[in-house]
Length: 185
Image (cartoon, rainbow, N blue to C red; front, side, top):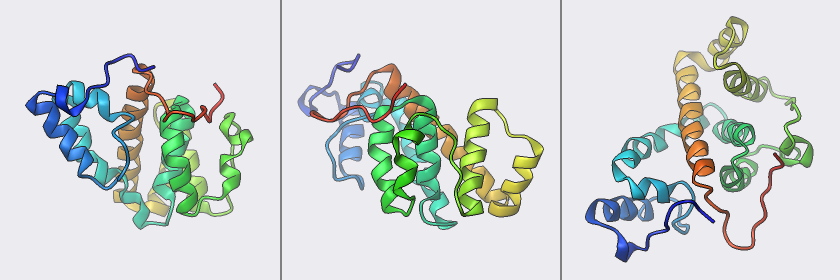
């Protein structure tokens, strides 16, 4: 059960309703769930992250699935059940192999990928989360493979999805009815 009230559209004030309408008009075609409800409670806090959302998916221009790989690494680190639930299927659809979603990975085991770009994404995101920075070797590899713009994109994705994961966890946002948590602590 979430720690904050779930408002219906009828209960929302005009600012909340504006955020709600914007989200519902977006690309998801899904129910109003997840990290959107806390943002609707305090709409001023929802606007800046909503503006980052299109940017957060921009890494796909480098190779299909890279942004989704980064997102599931973040979800695993935060044990963000809803984020994993929402993005694991998108990652598989984008070409990340099903083995990345095995119980082993969901239990925080290290992964190695055949493609150096996927390894880089995994290692960069993991190192940034665990060390709160990346070392020079990792940075140099990222710059060589992704370029300066790609490194900025990747750091932005990490920042955005850490915000999303923290929001989901703090407010205990549930999965849809009947779904079980996919991640072990």
